[in-house]
Picture 1 (cartoon, one colour):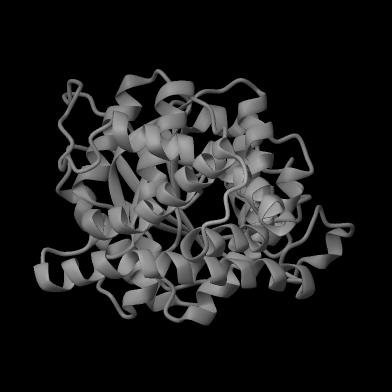
Picture 2: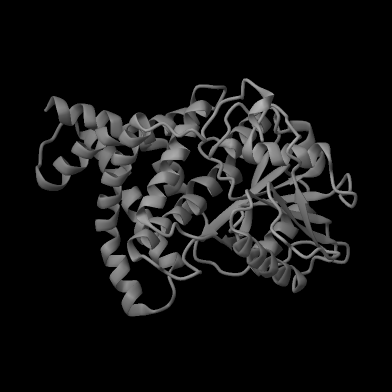
Amino acid sequence: MAVLFVSRLATLLWLPQAIFNFCGLVMFNSFKRGVAPKFNTIDPPAVTFRSFTRGYNAELTCEVARKNLEVLGNSALQNYRVEVITDMPVGIERNSNLLERVVPRDFRPNVLNRARALQYCLEEPSENVGANEWIVHLDENVVLTDEAVQGIVNFCSSGKHHFGAGATSYTNGGQNNWVISIVDAAKIADDLGQTRFQFKIFHQPLLIWKGSWYVTSSIVEKQVGYDKIIASGASEDQYFATIANRLHYTFDFVDGEVWGHSAATLGEQIQQRKRALQASLTIALSHNHPLGTVQHWASRLVPLTVPSLIFGLFWSVPTIFLLDFLAGFIFAIRAYGYTFGVLRSFSNDMPFKALAALASPLVFVADLFLESAVCVLAVIAKDPNIQGRRKSRASIG
């Protein structure tokens, strides 16, 4: 009974996320496709689409840049540019709408990795970036869609908020591993649930901010800056959003979704989760919003929630009715996210889609054990790439 009671209490740490997901998926239409223009497109905004890469996969970088240029060429945008910021040259052929920028090795601010590259763009802006231009930051493997570009145009034309972010679908590039595909498909439930709810209702990153793609104005980005980031790793964007929120800038949800790429193997996904969890500790221990801190420790204490699920599935051991009800609600919302992801993201191959939807609750249970293993691995296996503010400027190079 004591183990179950402690496990139930640990499960309550997921309650804010469950409430936000429930409200976001219920209050807004999550299956609506297409984004309609909301403003006059005679004078569309100027937008720079900026992605960062270490330069290790030049072929992928060039292919993604080509696809994004193709999508933008068919959009309502007229004044746009794609910039690839890289630590090493990738051989992109420059034209009027495509630019490769290599961060000099002797550029040594107080931050590393992606934050270093983005700070370089702030201190050494492109000659064509205007003062009133909007910047869209993309992960190196993110492919734009027509819907996302229209949503970005709507957001920038509105001008009501300073930062925007939207949903990412991970299944449009095909399914190499159907288990990984179901796990990644569940991420869109978080995007259309908690992320959309917090931005549309509160206009703050109360729980989460995913940096796979986001929009901001060049003026505001320069005022916030990346040189204040004390975490260098998977949570650089989260820390950036935390600073912006502390400075009272507002956020909104951008309609439309972009296409991302799932991890090729289960081992790669485990490493990605471990790095993200380790880097997020810096956020939790700094000046993050209390709800964000609760969410971090909910992720850290996943192993404690496993007995609550196991007892709930196989043994009827009641504790307190309200506690049991809330734990059931949390697990139901989390499990539904996997089924929702399949229904929302998978192709219209109905036999496979139906089979994946039926298997999704089992994948949720398996993923819970996987998350528990990641939590243990994050404690015992330190990642040298997750660093705080570096102590020596000589560490770059």
